[in-house]
Amino acid sequence: MDIVKLSAVEIKEKILKNELSATEVVKAHLNRIEEIDKDINAFISINKEGALEAAEKVDEKIKNGEELGALGGIPIALKDNIVTKDTKTTCGSKMLENYRSPYDATVVEKIKAQDGIIIGKTNMDEFAMGSSNETSFFGPTRNPVNTNLVPGGSSGGSAAAVKAEEVALALGTDTGGSTRQPAAYCDIVGIKPSYGLVSRYGVVSLANTLDTVGVFGRDVSDAALMLSAIVGYDEKDSTSYENPTHLVVEKDLEPTEYIKGMKIGIPREIYLDQIDKRLIGVMDKVIKVFQSLGAKVEEITLPHLEYGLSTYHVISAAEISSNMARFDGLRYGYRAKEYSTLDELYINSRNEAFGDEVKRRILMGTYYLSMGLGREYYEKALKMRTLIIDDFNKAFKDYDIILTPTSPILPFQLGKLKDEPLTKDLTSIFTAPVNLAGLCAMSIPCGYVDGLPVGLQIIGDRFKEMNIIKAGLAFEGGMKNGI
Image 1 (cartoon, rainbow, N blue to C red):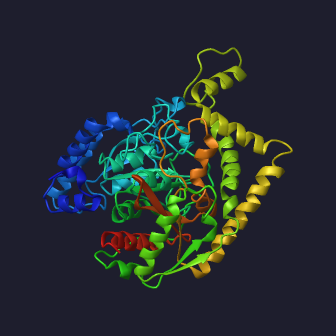
Image 2: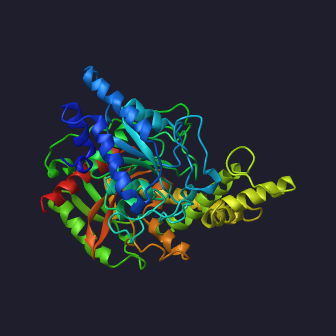
Image 3: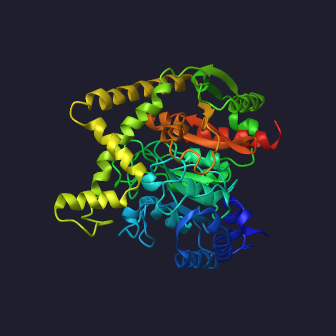
């Protein structure tokens, strides 16, 4: 039995049946990391001792006949902007190269409470600013599908770790597509939950009104299992959703049963000049699969979708400018050795420890918020955000889910777009509006084009995660059955 090829659901079942021990599972995945991560660079830190200790506790529970949590014995990786007491949290930056948090994030507490086993912390674009995982202080992550390609970002390390079978499940974060786009590029499933469904307490903020914690799995069932374990109200997060959301997936249904009665919208605005024309043929096949399963598919309009990316960049950059002010060389993180005044301490610390992409976004955000320009840029972006939300609200009155490609661009070569940040930003054109509206969305594999993986984005209304999960299970089943 090749343990690392087992799904998360299969791992848990085999542990419960005493066909495998949690210790065996963890050792197999640690060996896998040691064997291949030098070529992938998915991890920044590995907590070998902590993982083995957690596995022993799971095995002891099984031995004593105690009830096992939902994630019992499953190896899990965390994006390195989710704070942990027992492992450093770097955010992929020199600024926090050796930072250790005094507490665990709420999602970490939930994973531990459900007997999940945290293997380590994954590589990421610096402070989650990037869409290719090339801006990390610890070097780029490579895509396991093809190591010459980027894995996407900013949660590329988590996506790569799941695809490379180094862990069964992983957490990322998603501010404008940073879970869904790497999921698409690495040919796995990534879910961005509705804003507020999962606590952000202990997640290093990028843009507070957009950030969510996302999940990765090799299939929809695994991703849904991971999501169900971390949802729930948290009094430590003022944006946390107070009404309980139960994600219960019925197993072993026919694909048609998952999607029965669903109405699906395809925005005509997705057929942009910038979209890779090869994706249009893929979308045509996707539509035929859903129609064959019994769904009603119709063209819709989201008239302000085309402004989503520019709106996102103004709002996110403004919030980034504010959030990054905390890294000043005084309280924690990197401090410059040479300075003669307080201003020089600030300037030298930030100049030496931040990478180019972080500096670019801080400058952009400061410009958008500067005196005389705030109304010209930031206020207009907030108004456009309201129009985008209204578009989605109207669409979801008549439709259960909306489909788009996850990215208009297929995975590209490492280094190819190094000096073209605006082209790389284009990868978020279909994902960023979802964050602006606080919706839920999933990226699911939908085939290959010329050897490159393609992701389908399934968008659902706020707190309607079950709609996207059911649609994902139906599509997955339809693809397997050759529909």
